[in-house]
Length: 185
Image (cartoon, rainbow, N blue to C red; front, side, top):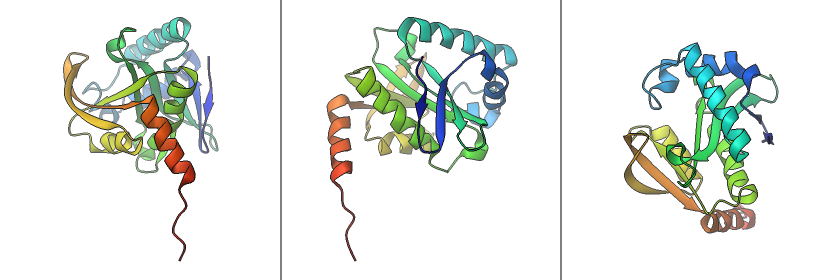
């Protein structure tokens, strides 16, 4: 199982040791309002960990717990998985953060790293992200990643705002960012 790092985060594969931290995250009604619409019970979080551990074993990727590198606190979670949890579907990226961490750029930071993992390590041809149509914060993260809006699509038995980026588009974006020089004064 792969651990990923960013400047401020350590992304560890979700495991049993993360149960209490993930449950604190997933039991917050505001965190879950756009995901399931209701807070998780402890049993829901345990089921998630069990499901995720099976995917790590089968696919070699799934959900990570996000840890603040400075404090060591579990502050979020994110994934590379398949849409509708079906391996025949395109790869999907997703994330969630504790409310206290909103607005700090951490979702974008984690999403950048997970996207690189999907394209560079998994060699995914495309990456898709979905969110509730009124979840503007997640939509902005998707747009920052260079993802294009495809419209409302049905996944997980609901209609979601759907965004996607191809591996080629991701590499072109990376090249543009690498060659960018800010204007001099």
